[in-house]
Figure 1 (cartoon, rainbow over the protein chains, first blue to last red):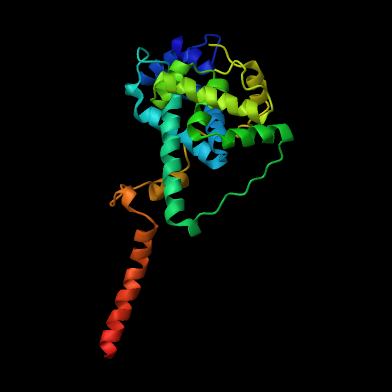
Figure 2: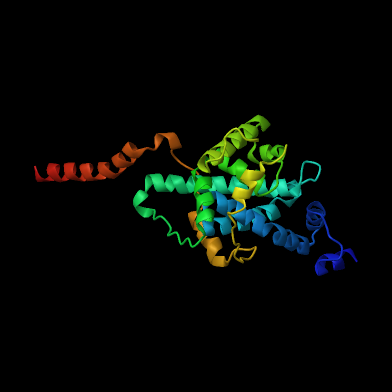
Length: 190
Length: 73
């Protein structure tokens, strides 16, 4: 009955943690369900951070590969699966971007900037530009907080930084966006 | 702690279309990943700078020139 529900996809709706538990017990269908749920959010997170389509796909695939390899490391008592997945994705992304930057610094003639085909609206491009202009630390906090509904505690856990740092980065990011948009900078902030 | 609604409205304008891609990488992608996987660094990163790279490139040329001059003389 349980497995039948899982395969058919409903009417019973499982939480992320229940699906992970089923995957830990050997039900591969549960992992597929988790992939369906998190493919898009993880892709959007990496894409908004890096503006690199291929890198975003790679990171999502690597995140799920790591989830399979380290499936027994996850425990619902330690936190939500969503936090765990974003943590894997963020760490993988940072490692790849560092390696890329190192290669670019040592062998600049081999590195070619990928062409940007942007047919987006002007407003969308403005937001994209402002997000890209934020320092990396502020950018990642802003993305996780506003686009992925993660709490400041969860963000602190994902980035492995103190809660105070999350608050301060968020505050500065918001002030910067307000300034770019010509809004009052003494708004609610964080 | 509440979210700043004005900021939320601005950020919502940046939507991202997600293309379809499978969970598992193709064999070619896996081989490419293996080939280009970051290897452990033999030299500490802070010591590798432009001057050191320049030295690595120039030293063999200088050495071969010196050997050639020595052979001629």
